[in-house]
Image (cartoon, rainbow, N blue to C red; front, side, top):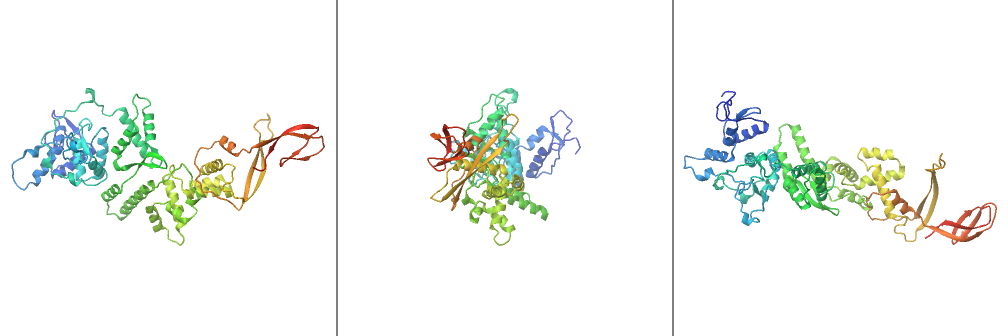
Length: 534
């Protein structure tokens, strides 16, 4: 065969027939079809072939007919059913059986493909599966330009099985000869002929939303958040964002079982990306290697995907901080870890009383895996303890950088929320001895212009025996005014106290309050007193 001849018809590619230069994807598709046909044809990227020859050779109807002819035991009469075409309007895109629109429930829910980017997603899934079913679906996808324009339909159960690496549902397994007996003769519109555009603004914005969801999976993104994000992408156009219901349906249709929509900590419709066990195992078996080192890496990658998926399923959030009950005992700290992570660490760490180390390292792994979603109990507890004993920002942030505790910023936020939430009340006070201690704090007591000076007083209550509370502390944004309002002590006004002129200091007692007063003349004072009791 000459170098400039078509690999299909052996005729020259320099004639008037349209030609096409194969890329890697097109060459791989032809080689797959060649294996199905049991032909010796093999192509490489950059090879030039006739466009019409390639279309006919890769036509799924012709491929199926060639396979039947190859496996036919002897000469037989050609049946009309051997020439039947796949009809996108009436046949399931995945299993190929006729869709019964009158009995959708029994047929496993029938849906129409409504967005054009579904083709690229399915072609990528075909490459991941890399099996006979994937080759059949790929061949169908390659002969259509626009699935929504072709009115393509599918069974929901077939789509789910195909995307998750399962087999064709048994009730849809069929022989190719039972397909409908009509040819596909639809003429597709070009973008210049009007009709549905190939990819409108809303589709482009939706694609960006899916990319945002995959890149920011460590956050709790609700359907409402994704709708708002889509509105941001459409800010420069006249198109409107999807509704929450339609956004949810589109995400499920786009990702399949890779996305779950649940309610987490009061937040409804939280979208989380995940990998199913079937897809992980399918990818694992598809990447087998005889090299022991490569095989070890493949096994570890599969195990890591299982553990990460279980970490994503942990029901937690960042609206409230963990309570002391979540880390006071080892069992509570271990219960925070998913079983797969506990098994993994239990096989590595071998020592007596290793439970605390497993819990600490496991929670550190979980915090690093989902830093903007989880608040690991041991992480925040260690940070608060370090701040209480050492009050060192450098120490806390250094340990946080290594993944051992929460950041100094998070610890400060916890202390602020705890102060505002508890206020000046003593929790669970039942007559324990209480003593208050106060001291002043001065900063910039003298300035050139007399401004920006600070004079304050701090008061603490010492209680014995100590009291505790188990209420969760809310994680909110606390302002300086919130702290000022919470920590303000009510001033008690005393009026009508007659004071005679004296030299030096004098104790004045009024209603149980004591004040030190010094004056140069007799006057009637109106002073502010700080009450020492309730």
